[in-house]
Amino acid sequence: MTPTTHFLPRRSHDTIAMHRTKAAGGGLGGAIRAEWTKFWSVRSTWWSLIAAAALTFAYVLPVAASVGIDPDEPMSAPGLLAGGTFYLAQFAVVALAAMFIASEYSTGSIRATLQWVPARSRMLLAKAAVLTPVLFVFGALTAGAATAIAIPLMRGNELPSSAAGLVWSFVATGGTFALTGLLSLGLGAALRSVAGSITVAFMVLLMTAMLAGSLGLMALLDYLPGMAGMNAIVGGGQPNPLSGGAVPYSTGAGLLIFAGWAAAALAIGNTVLRRRDA
Image 1 (cartoon, rainbow, N blue to C red):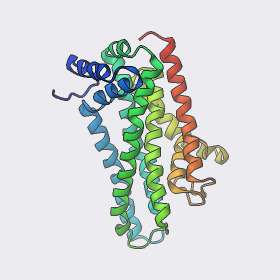
Image 2: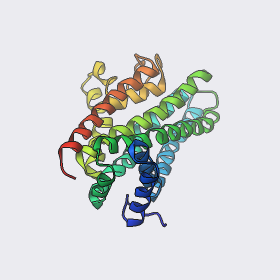
Image 3: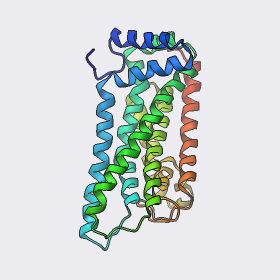
Image 4: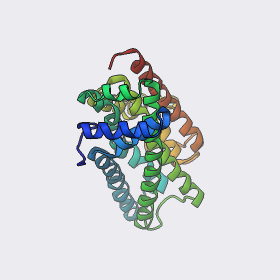
């Protein structure tokens, strides 16, 4: 089987996924196995993950080198990760998650998917169950690799971070990747358009934060999803690289705020999925 750039573009993909579901005896486990097969059977998954890693490095490494040259503008390693995730990497994750569901509407394969898994909430849950661990592990590993290269480039000019703080920043980066994917999955289920989902996710994650900052709504800023992800990576009490202010809550609180936004998007997507025809 040769991978293609679309989700479920050929009957061979459909057949394999259906056989996986039957082999697992149906239910949620079978649905997850079918979605896992679809997820890894296309080139777009691999290219999106490669793009997310490349965009993280494209931000972190040049900024780290700049800190090493100019000690008057220090930044912490978690701050570098937060900036790389917020400005660049999260949009490759958005594209991956949007294509995971919305491309099935463009190809018409959503009808086959819903024939195999007629419980629509179960289908959406199965997709979320595939995305979440993959993006979490991928984000944490990417953060660790980027930090390992960035710290020597900063030549000791970086703001200090403890070993525990670095580990938490890796965990928070993985969590931010996963929650970004879930938010985009919900939007994809609601909008049924890859382009529309990416556009709305861009507005929710980036433009709302920039608009709130430009209007001076600092009390609101920290509770928007994109900013909550940044704050979670940076850690409580540390300077946020976008707003410049100290993060007002812990890493766990930042992830919980982001999780609330992702849950709302999934709830909207699930409602639309259940009420509208495929």
